[in-house]
Amino acid sequence: MESQRRLLIAPSILAADFSDLAGEIRKAETGGAEWLHLDVMDAHFVPNLTFGPFIVSAIRKLTALFLDTHLMITDPIGYAPRFAEAGSDLITFHVEAFENPREAATRIRRSDVKVGASIKPATPPEVLFPLLDALDLVLVMSVEPGFGGQKFMPHALEKIRALRREIDHRRLDTLIEVDGGVDPETAALAREAGVDVLVAGTAVFRAESPARAIAQLRSTM
Image (tube, rainbow, N blue to C red; front, side, top):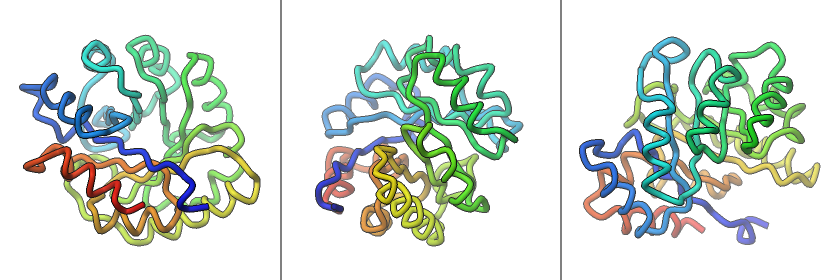
């Protein structure tokens, strides 16, 4: 089954040079990336501040790539319609932000987007099991959310394996994504564990050749 799953590469725009955003996005496109990962942080849910719907709208005008928007904010339900209107294709929220994450998924889907749920490193994967049928994607954070360039946490691999087993057992189409410290070495481990989508920021946008970097990530198949 592992070899039959298509591996998607989602470069994280957070690591791009924002002074030449159009050029950076072109590098991802020509390099073969299928998605762009957009990290939205509010300096409250996580200790960093990035960008809002206005930047997502600008990115949407620059590319037809699938926009994978990760809301690391305290009110993802309230802001989801704005990010959907800006052009996001998928909106991921954090289960840690809600007592009833299933309701959150339902309400976000009303904005006519695909829906994902993410867990921080300290959150067990089992909290996602009751939601899997309501989600298009689950995101395993392999670093503490907030900043790029951190080292991959190996215990994320067992979380991925647990989710892979549950998704396959229930014959669901829910994708598994991993974000944080992804490079060719950790990508191979994550792929073996059962990942479908690799988020890579520094490894792609800070590489001498983003196309070669994307090819190396994809060679883990």
